[in-house]
Image (cartoon, rainbow, N blue to C red; front, side, top):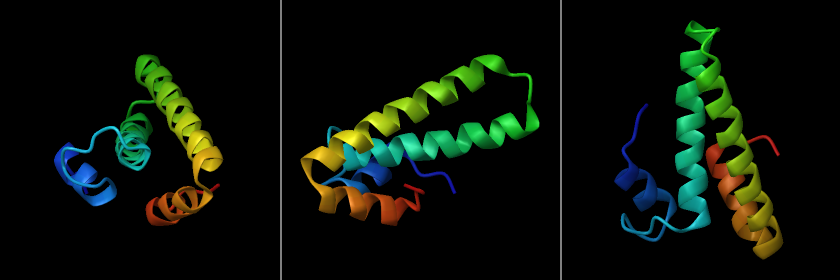
Length: 86
């Protein structure tokens, strides 16, 4: 299921124009990670996409770490909502 950016930010941020919230960015990165993962299942030798995927996972991890330090309740809520492991 592909959502556009406005729908993601409306669902996970305060409104559709709230593009700076950590939750909205984490949700956007998660959608992009899922999309790239599906692409790499069909195109195993696409190393540029693989590198982009690794960089996106690192950015999401950094935002999740920031949210853990800032507000643990918001962190737990977004992890539960998106179904992330950690």
